[in-house]
Image (tube, rainbow, N blue to C red; front, side, top):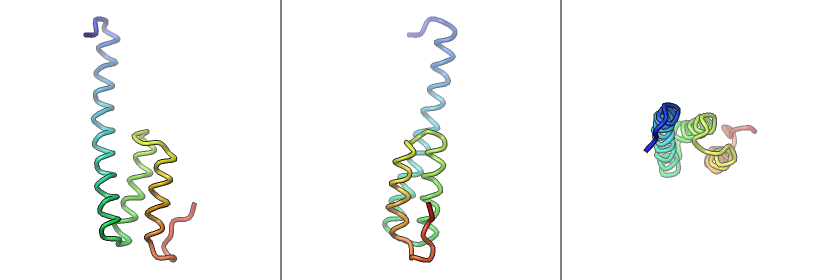
Length: 84
C-alpha cells in the first residue's frame, strides 16, 4: 500500500494510463480482426489508422504498429496500398 502522497498520485496516474491503453488496444484488436475477416478498404484503413494512433499513445510499440500496417496493406488492392 502506498504511503506517501507522491506514491498515491503516481498510482492514480498509472491506473488512468492503464485504462486508456487497454481500451485503445482492444479497439485495435477488434478492428484488425474485422479487417482480416472482411477485407474492405474502409475496414483496413480504419485498422491502419488505429494502429498509428495506438503507437502514438505508446500503447503498442512502433514496430508492432508497422507490422500490423504491413500485414493489412497487403490485403488492399494495389492502387490503394499505403506508402511508407
